[in-house]
Length: 251
Ligand code: KIV
Image (cartoon, rainbow, N blue to C red; front, side, top):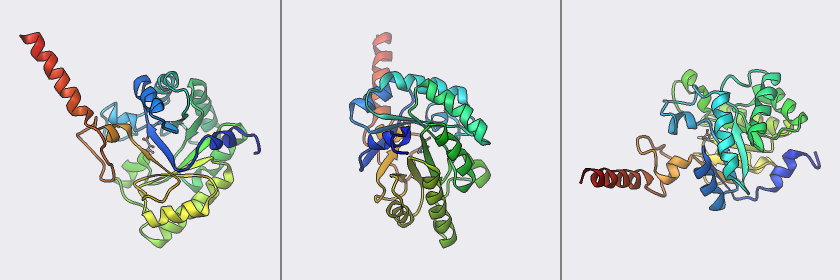
């Protein structure tokens, strides 16, 4: 894969990799201007933009629409777009859905899951579509798993995660997100793989970190995940500005 799109993308990511989600033109442009290396148009938009309890109602049409907005705001960062649930049930569906996201402006796509996704990753990579893998806690499975649970606590589970990570790398993934997993397991995977690991709730020893924009800037105060560090208070600034406007109109 010497000059493959996946390898070219990887060369644009220098550990420690800073990654964040963005869903529209202003958040993408501000993230890019701040020097973020990778922007994920995450299906978390179903929650932090759409107000839904999880990501399972997000469609390909939503992702195409938001990817187009993000593309217009980005000059430097690598743009990865999520394949939403049910849009990659088999390799052909994965290819067709990914082509829509690439056409909308994504440099790469992300899909959730381990050994069950290998054929799909291979199919996409063969078709020159770079793939970011995603293992550990899988938000698209939250309903069937009955909640958000940390992964890798049992040795058997940790072994499965390591096996999946190896297989996804061998299938051609250019990077892998490790979500909500025991830090020690994430570190083991990071040391074992050549491709970069990008952690969220997976300790400090990954090759990079990714966070949901709304957690970082404090613009979704109604739910903040336990691992999130909040760096701003956009919710308060927004409330105060609107309240001042209301007061102005009333006076
Ligand atoms: O959709 C998303 O925001 C994600 C991140 C949590 C990695 O997949």
